Every structure is written in C-alpha cells, then in structure tokens.
Length: 448
Ligand code: FHN
Image 1 (spheres, rainbow, N blue to C red):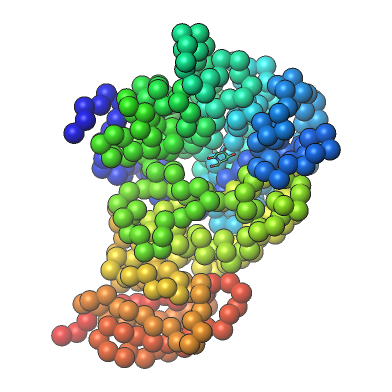
Image 2 (cartoon, helix red, strand yellow):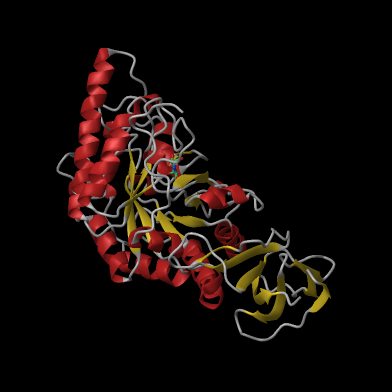
C-alpha cells in the first residue's frame, strides 16, 4: 500500500440524495458550445476534418484571431428553453454544459478573464440562461470545465523551468478563482465535470486536484465531481496509485463502452460520454462530421448497454454558432424520446440485472432499489437490440428463478413463451420495428 496524501477518499459508494439521483437518472445530455461553433471546422477557407472544438489548435490560429470570433457570437438562434425542452423530451434527466473549453472562452461573464461572453455583442450571461432553462424543466445541471487552456498566458503543458512552475501556479490560482466563481454564481448545479487534465503540468499537481474538489464541495454540499479531475501525489489519474477510484464516479469511457459482459464495472459508479457524430463534440459543418452520425436505435443500444452495466450515458449535442440546435440532432432527440416515453422504465432508476448474463441479442436491466447502488427484484427488462436470424429468442434464467410472465413494456400485451427446461425459456423473436423492443419479464423463485 503506497502512502498518499492526495489519493482516493472513502471507497463506499455515496448514498446521499444528490448521488442517488445522479445514479438513477442514467441518461444525460452533454452540450459543447462555444466560439468554435462559429467557424465549425473551417478556418480561412480550409476545412479540417477533425473535432471542431480543436480548430484553434489544429489550424494554428493565434489567440488574437480566435478571440475576434467573439464579435460574431450574436446568439441569433439561441433558445435555451428549447434546448432544455428537447433534452427533457429525449428522456435526459440532466445536462452537462461546457462553461469553458480548451480555447479558454468563458460562457459566463467571469471577473477573472477578459475572454468571456461579456466581450460579445449581447454581453449576456449565456451560461446563467442555460442553467435557469434546464432547472426550470426539472433537469439537474453539471458544469464542464477544461483545465487545459490555450488562451491563458500562464497555462503550461509541462513544468520544465522555475518560470514554468511560477506561471502554472498563477494559472491554477486563476482556475480556482473561476471555479469558485461558478459555484457561487450557480449554486443549484449538481456537479462539476472536469476535462483537459491529462498534461504533465496538471498531473504534477495532485494536491490542487484534491483541494479544488474539496473547495467545490464546501461551496456546494453534495456536489458530484468526475474522476477526470483527479491526479494523486504520483500523477496517477482517475484511480490512485493503489487502484482506488478518485472523484465520485469514473468518467474515463469516452466514445466507447465497457464490453457488454464486463461486470467488473458494476462495482462502482461510472458515466460514459458519447458523440452523435463520429468524432466531433462541437458543431462541425462538413460531410466528414455527418458521416457516421448514429441513428436513434444505435443511441438507444448504447444507452441500454450502459445501464445494464450500472453506468450513465452522457449524449453530446453541438449546437450551431448562432445557438440553434442542429436539426438532425433535434430530430434524433425526439426519436429517442419517443422510445423513452414507452420504454424509459428500463432505463431510469434501473441498473444491472443481477444473475442475468449478457444474452448476445441485447441487454437486461432491472429496477434499482432507490436506496442502494445495486439492483434486484422480480422484474427484469430484456431489451432486444439484435434480433437473432433464427427467429428465436432464448432466455437463460438464473439458477433458482423461473419466469412467470412476459409482457411488452411499451403496450403491456402478454408475450407467449415456452419453458424448455428449468432454466431456458424461448419465444418468437420480434420483427424489427427499427427500434429496440423491451420485454418486461416477471420472474420469481422456482418451485421445488
Ligand atoms: O478534448 C476534449 C474533447 O473536445 C471533448 O470535450 C471531450 C469530451 O469528453 N473531452 C476531451 C477529450 O477527452
């Protein structure tokens, strides 16, 4: 056991109301919005097929030229109430919104920077409007904050000299000021989502990552913080040098999920984030970005795979430069929402179905005991995402249980099935309806 001053805290899962709510929500909306949405992947006629929010870096744009974009941040299509209604209709229960991405532009009028919405034509507190709109719809809000900052003169990737160390200390004081400012301006947010913490400079400051987590939790009791923030004394990230999780939940899964059969992840809280596009978080106008846009069925499949393994899914939206939603993303939200309206009981307040092994044709989830992280009851949801070509769906029932009844979750109709033996049930697999189909399985102790 390595002695650590800034390693993980207590390893029991948090059971306070905020954390229980976060865990039960299961589905969140991620929003990446900032100046990068204006050029949307093209700089001076050159389109770069890479994440739009990286354009400043990938096109080698100077801080000065990039800052000039603020003059065009006119909010002509910005309707945060519509964003919030769209997220709610989709079935998201919380939003995580970028307050400052790697380009350093603050979406709130920060007293600690000149590079903020205060320097845009409207001068409006865009972040405040977003927070209020989502709260009004009953969604919880988490604030994304990039520690990496291409704009700030004191940012350093590595600390090679004394000057670097002095500058970076100033940078961390600035970041602390901004984060405390966020907590004080928007005290009803539920958590902070850190990013841009992978450079050597941050990894050498495990103490700062430890302290800022405590500072934020002192300002907002119950605040939830992701594991990306944290480094320990030795620079280990997410998990400390003894292998213990830092932060309240693991946030390392990005554009990927644990394997469907990997039950090891159910031992902790975790959240995966996903793009609708293949690889850009901010709005990118090119065909490259549109290629591989996920369908509603693919999104639902990712969502139920996540829930079946005890995680949350944060699905990203990248509004356009004027603040309007990308029409195909709004439409996708509605289609996922229509599915969630009928089948959301298999997602919200749900988690892994103990004892029900990954079946290959889809996923099992089970209603979560609201007071606990684990699950377990007589009800299991079978979500069919891959219809077997055999036309037969085989359900392997855990030892000691038997299936009493199967019904369609969406319309309640009873589904006939055949018990082949004590632990195997078969039914005719559904015809594809384009979207995953959910069976509610009522099971109970097998009679001797
Ligand atoms: O570089 C960023 C990226 O732009 C985006 O914000 C994602 C979201 O998880 N995080 C970083 C890459 O890990």
